[in-house]
Image 1 (cartoon, helix red, strand yellow):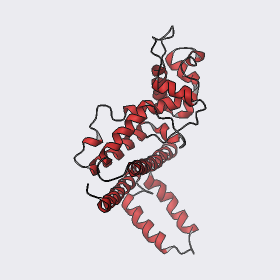
Image 2 (tube, one colour):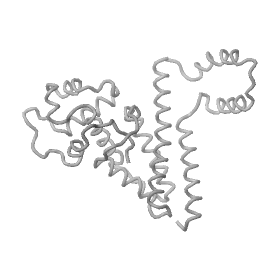
Image 3 (cartoon, helix red, strand yellow):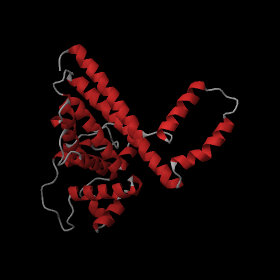
Image 4 (cartoon, helix red, strand yellow):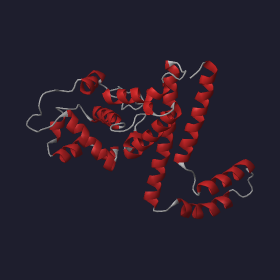
Length: 256
């Protein structure tokens, strides 16, 4: 399930908006909660959370700012609605992990789809973990992602822990990738050129210090990546090791 939260102060109001949205037709402005939320997602995808203000959303929709408050209480609630909206879209129109040939393939599919999800909606990585209020989108995502883990020998709690660890690996790698992309864009310098500048300076600064393991492993990794690292490769390595661990666990507690 979603691990994000904006610290919303009105859970009852949020739950009502998530699970019991108004069914009446849009008023004079043509606004609905769904329309406001979709516009906010589009703006955040293009410009990030910093650009997400009620005024900007209102301008996008061609209405006055105060018109939005008849549909959402404010930005914290709106971000929660945005999270749930994009969560509900993640597996729309695609093969589901529970339909994969093996549970291992289903786990890898979850990792790949969540990686694509976070890279597409980079503002999600800006949100701090907290106490999310799950809506239909997040709950549906949770249901779908538990499916390949069901019936393989894990307890219900172990299923939740496995999925949580898997999504944590994805989020960590995606945050790193997003940070790298921002640095590259801001500096206009690629990794190889950056290292050509930094490498000699660092070698001079480290002269006289002895780090045999760091030197050996760092040199091998740098040669392999041709960069400071590769978030996606790190993610796939971590997912494979998680799968190995789960396979060993279920091998000790009963048949698949």
